[in-house]
Figure 1 (cartoon, rainbow, N blue to C red):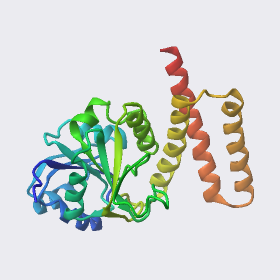
Figure 2 (figure 1 turned 60 degrees about the vertical axis):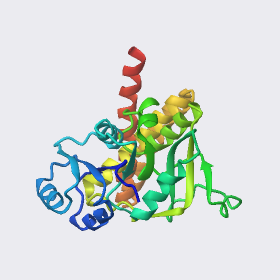
Figure 3 (figure 1 turned 30 degrees about the vertical axis):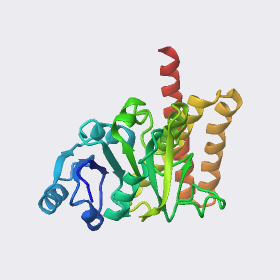
Length: 273
């Protein structure tokens, strides 16, 4: 089983120690890791356990998923790279199966496994082994490094969320395809790659809505009525949830208001340029 033409790129951000076990299947691959929470203790633990680390960077600044993955991909020297997250479980065999999916498919840029928690196929396609799909889960995919770089990689304006949706649009516009191999499987443990606290909750909510606004502005003409309605709606919801003591929902609405303000200044700057 040839593995030396595949590299693993993976981002950490306040990653719990117990997810290290998920990295065991990557021992025979070249590893490229970027920790955006400056966790030196975790770096020491992982560096001791995994000898094939080609790069392990740590940073005080969280630049987001899109920018972080692009940074690592630029360092990759192999034909393929597997983009994965710490809370993904995938076997060595499934990674090799993903690579074999590229055989005979000159239009293939990305191959993806069947992820238990993510359905991107129809009932009609269920009995097929390999077929093209329109969407991926950004948490796990194998890509042709050269082709991925050529189409411009991830759009770094997305922090995290929506960058994978945007990538699929970009792939389609370049007449390339994503192939799902049903015999390759992965398990996504679900938001276990980051320690849960108030800050991480707010970051997720803010950047999900912020990414949605960027995506819509990129592919759809922004309607003034929605542009005005969105912040008013979430502001009123925030007040309502506060008065009814639904504090988590109130905080979520506040995050959405902040996301809109952030997007407004982004959009204003974009128009000025």
